[in-house]
Image (tube, rainbow, N blue to C red; front, top):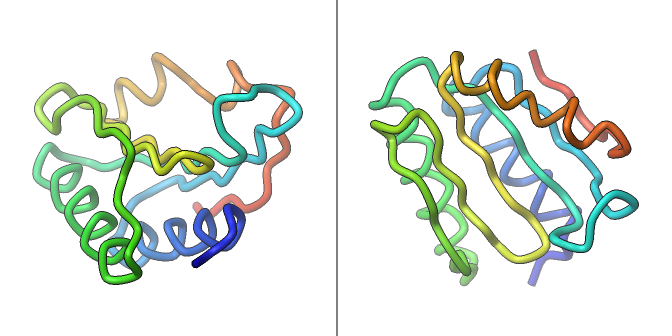
Length: 115
């Protein structure tokens, strides 16, 4: 079983390999009790949001890791996959700009930023 940082880094790698954009891995442990890490990234279309979600869930499933909760839909422009200590946020460009989680969680530490 992966610890939370290893899982967060693995998710970051999976979305990078699948061509997500502007990927940020945030350590939110000092800012919230909700999770240890957020992975935030941008997908350029509904299709890409769906593909990224499927890829991450498939890859994590192969490691025996299932999400606690999935919220949102590709057509809404936002999809969240909650793995307990690690939460993945997939955003359309417009909603990423609107919600700007990096600003909301400004107390978080950026672990990795993949442009």
